[in-house]
Image 1 (cartoon, rainbow, N blue to C red):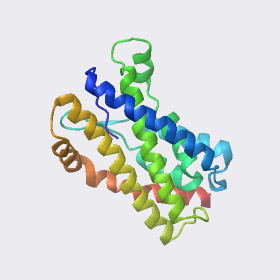
Image 2: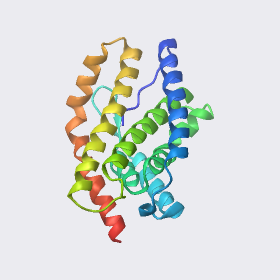
Image 3: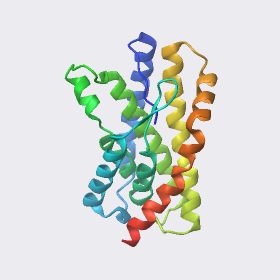
Length: 211
């Protein structure tokens, strides 16, 4: 996940557009996608929120100022187990950071509110896309087999594509750079590393259902 923000009017317009799209997408997903039993109900959902929260607390700063965390794996795992609605809940709640709370309170070192809106909107849209791909590929629910592994890998590509496209749009708008150049640079920096998190997500989900 990449986090970059600015107070520019064009970036604010982008934030507003992505935020509105995320609200409608989340509402539709929650209404149309009930929680799958494999995740273990709301207690299981809370478990995955906690896992993602811990992952979001240890981001990695890349060259050029981009900040990346490894929450893709547990978000994908929760989505594979509980469906798109579970993915949305885990992505929205689990990725809340203390920096965002400081930003809302107007304290130094905090993330501006529009940065938080964009980050969580991008994450929710990424999780929704991955969730529906998994729903189509595994209509009977998650089973730890080769088919689900392939499905999680494809969903991971979808998640990564949406998240990085939105992040690249934000960076390009903020810095006045071509979108394609920013996207290509992001892929070169951490694309291969994050792509490897999809198999890890499948392993996490498989261990969860076995346990």
